[in-house]
Image (cartoon, rainbow, N blue to C red; front, side, top):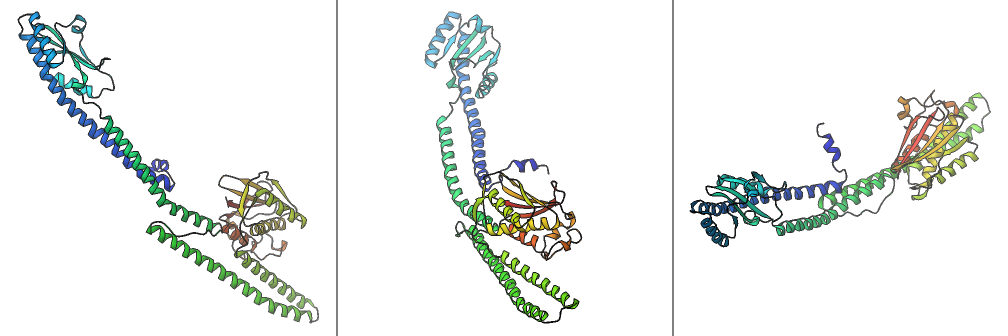
Amino acid sequence: MKFRWLKQMMPRGLYGRAALILILPVVTIQLVVSVVFIQRHFERVTQQMTEGMVREIALLDQVATNAPTAEVARERLDVLDKTLNFASQFPAPANLASQRGDTRSFFDLTGIVVISTLRANLSQIRSIDLDNNTNSVRVVQETPNGPLAVTFARSRVSASNPHQLLVLMVFVSILMTLIAYIFLRNQLRPIRRLSHAAEEFGKGRNLNYRVSGATEVRAAGRAFLDMRNRIERQIEQRTLMLSGVSHDLRTPLTRLRLGLSMMEENDEVRAMERDVDEMGRLVDAFLEFSRDGASQGEPETLPICGFVAGVVEDMRRMGRDVALVDCDSEEEATFRPDALKRALANLIGNAVRYGTRAEITVSIARTGWRIAVHDDGPGIPPERREEAIRPFTRLDPARNQDRGQGVGLGLSITADILRRHGGSLKLGRSERLGGLMAEMILPR
């Protein structure tokens, strides 16, 4: 719970997470090398170089202190300046002699080491100036004969930044990251292909998937192909079984109808004829259910609103009071038109059977689209909506059984068709008409 915010900030895609796993160690190593190694190395080298300069400054201080006069001290210092490459001023000018304290730029990190080393080894220092435009160090020290100002190049106490090392390190890191990314992309491509094939199979589309990639990915790919084959065989066996049973039942039903037609008509015969008709409707429902369990042709890419408008117009020609009230988009989608037409027709048929009219709305989003069928009927209680989608379920009195000739397969067939498209069927209350809202949810 404490680190949920961190989890939300992490990338969700496989590419992003793999790149994070790759880049994070590289960046960490760069920081460790830069801060721990280079910075500490600079500090040690700077301290050693400054300690060497301390001895030379101490020599100048000793010469200025032991000289009998200032003129003699100046002559001796001039000789040492030429030998040691210093620029000393003795006695120091008034503007330098009056300075107290140390100055350096804020980003001069090695200057901290220079100042602390000089102060630790030279006790008579008045001021140290590192913040100047000449890239030099000026040390003003107190002597018995007056202040001594010593100026020397900054490079004599600070190690130069190894730009070549930094540039080489960054260049090699970028190159190796690029090579690793290309290798990683090739390794992740089979996983993406497997994911795409599984997603399309969930929508009822069989892609030509070939097993490739690492050993683990190949094993997952072969498992997916075996699973897909088993599911297809199971669907085929179910379809054949339902079709066979339904066709076999037609023969005794036909004999029963023939026998009843030859009997004298009375109340008992009419009741038996109604039972035979009910059995006939059950057989027809079985056939329709088995037919919708099988594939309904190849998917096609069609305009969504045009497709829905065509189904609504067909239902209107059949005398249904239905209208398309909200759909003006030119978006296209890929689906099996025959199967989806049957699913939408089932919902419209239920709406006008249990209500007086139906209205259709279509909403399109980035991730998918929804077709909602609204009616003004009695609706379905929330606790029984999941039960209503099950096969051979009739809800009474919520959906009046006397208002139609169904056997409880319409919603089940619709839900099965939508699942084969990778979508789902959602039942709710219609805010437009007050009855039931049956919503077809389909992904892109």
